[in-house]
Image 1: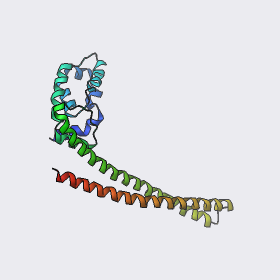
Image 2: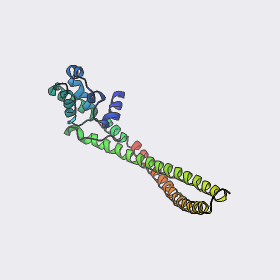
Image 3: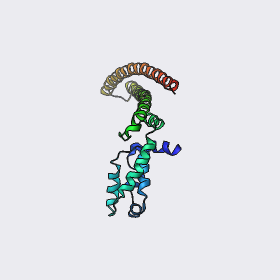
Image 4: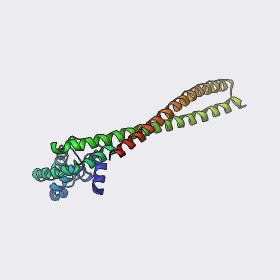
Length: 208
């Protein structure tokens, strides 16, 4: 199912690449059943045909709606399988409520399981990003404190420059202290998120 993996990865982008730049010849020669199938198998909204219609209207071409809908219906049934629901959820792909009633329940159960894993993973990623940002700011401020120190001891500095350098260094040091406290808390949070992630992964794995 490698093609499906690729389609799921790009489904949040909306149009397939060609539909946004579809030429007159492409609008005239495209297989609309295939376009519908690709939109369906990627789990795209039924409103997707509107984007295709607008793209081709610029060239005076009207999509074959019957062929498109037939292809999309076929693609949707392939998309709305439980394993694809889990894969879509883990990828963070938005679900557009496209699955027919006979497939929706099983698909959504797996989608929510995958989505929950995605949320756990996202919390860890967010914590990592926040930690990296604060550590980078600490490094920048520590460098600034050192620079102000050079200003204080420099024979070429004026009294006013030395006074301002001392005030700046004090302000930066206080900010560094607050940031380090935030880093400590974020490290605790990150450790908790990582543990919850592993626990959830174990739970999901044991259920499969």
